[in-house]
View 1 (tube, helix red, strand yellow):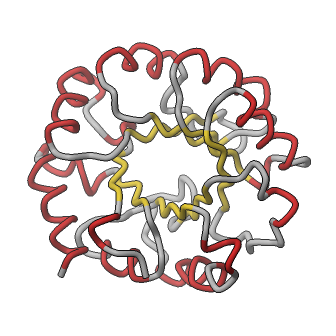
View 2 (cartoon, rainbow, N blue to C red):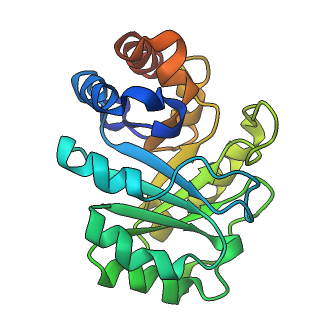
Length: 221
C-alpha cells in the first residue's frame, strides 16, 4: 500500500465550472491539488467530446501545476506532438486504441512528456515488459467510460493489486480514475493507487477546498 502522505490528487477539469476556468485553476492551486487532469475525447472511442486541446494551451500560462492529459480516442499519435507544444506534462493513451503501444509511448517520451497506458474496466492488464523502457504510469478506469452516472466499480481495484505483485510493475505510478470521492478514496489508495483522478468529488457544490480536505482526511484515516 502506498503511504497516504504521498498520494496525489488530480482534479479532472471537465467536471469543473467551465464558465470560470481561470478562477477554478486558482482555487485548485490553493487547495493543494497536485496536478490538473484533462480528458480529451474524440466522440468515437467514447461517445462524447467534452474538451478540446485549445483549453490546455489557454490554461497553461495560469499555473505551474503539471498537466495530465488522458487521450480517450482512437489513433492518438497525431495529437501527441501538439500536446508537447502547448504544455502537457503527462500523456496517457488507451491500450485498447493503440495497435502498437510501445511505438506510441516512445513518441510521447521523445516529445519530452511522461507516457502512460490507460485501461478500460473490462480490459485485463497484459504483460507490459516490452513497454517498460517508455512507460511511466498506468491509468485504471474505475468506472465504465461515459456510462450514465459512471458508478464506481470497486472490483476493478483488483487489477492494481494483482499487477503490483510484480516488482517491475510496482515501480510504475498507478492512477485510478472514475467516480472517486471521500467515500471511497481510502479504498482506492489501499489497493495501491498513487494518483487519484477526481472529478465530481472535487467540484461537488462548488466547494473545492473543503472537498479536497475531506478526500485527504479520508485517505489518512
